[in-house]
Image (cartoon, rainbow over the protein chains, first blue to last red):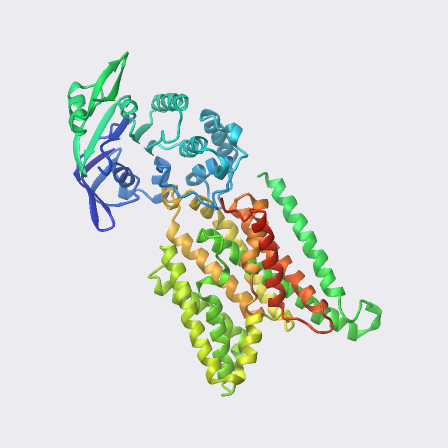
Length: 253
Length: 325
């Protein structure tokens, strides 16, 4: 995915200005930046949920040339759980919720095929939510619901997965699981884009995009020392990076 | 939810419906005696059967419309009348009653039923225009409320200027199942089939909307068009029921809540079951209305309000309205 002079609007206001981004295919890209930098807006722009000018291309094709349905099969989006609407209607059980991810693949009557059921079962086992399948998602804990919603995202089987704070409500063991799923998805040549507050997890990504005030601060490979300098500058030098084994961790100064 | 589970539930509810229908035909001041000749047959097949079937279909239309309204607006208090259809229908009836004295041929052809139907659809249309479209649910709800108030005021003006019409308009407001003819039954049956078909096809959209509007969009659903279609079904079902039976209260609000625990949030089941529950509720109310104080019949709207209200209160007491505390 590439963007050229991308300006994203929320209502009449431009939230992000003239971004030229390079999101490498088959790699994991993390978007980071202070609160209000426009991270979620960028993800929503890439998901065609917000108005934008400039261009976004996927495999060299302009996004606007894709039909809504074809786009839905190629690009899946996970909503930030704090903004996701969950009210009295979301008493669907976990299985049926994950099945919603198959909607782009179903015909107009939306009757699930045997392969839809297989996909749902597979991703629910993968996210350890199979045991929850009969439970209403309204009565699940925050972390359980987040895993069901992740399974819903995986069920789409899209090429590009856009995830807005996928780690919200996940405890450390499930954060490890999340990293394992990411690696698995990368093996299957998926393109992953995450918005993350957890900088140490973001540093596990291949590529970092740093936003500040609706503008691009820096983009580059996550193991590049130059990227680390930019990251410290992004947070006004209020964090430091330390090496821990093969990984980098961000610590308060 | 297994599909067999749903089939079983539907079968049970349909069985109850049939029992009630038979009771509706048999129960009455003149008992069943097919050998008693033409007079008896006329009562059974030209009065009680169309009345019972008509009440059932009207209830089903209202239950379906209520189910769609609650899911579409994601509001457990939504009912079929909230987009201005009720006050529109009422005004339509008022206008037809006023015009009736002028002896215009088209007024006779349209009748009170036609006036109510057109009024209901125009009420919804006015709400849509006032909201500037159908994309923003909250605006649409608010403009529905505003339209109801304005049309209600126009209606009050009518009864103020023509106090002689008060009684007829009041009767329409309380609902009436006594005059249902075979043609009314047929028209409601056709509308019900069409609306149920549409509801079954578009129900998964409502499921996806439970994940939030943005997520539903990224699943490739043309939400705007689907929302318009669902509002169309809602208006058509409500208009058709209201035109034949008047403004029967509470069926559309109560029926979807009665079946919510059965459908487990799956909209295809929820809408189908809401329709059947609406039919059962109205038919049972009709039976009670004509037998409770026989030979005096109480207006059906009073019975549905007491029954439906009582049941909702009970559900509220058990905190099973489907709202999370």
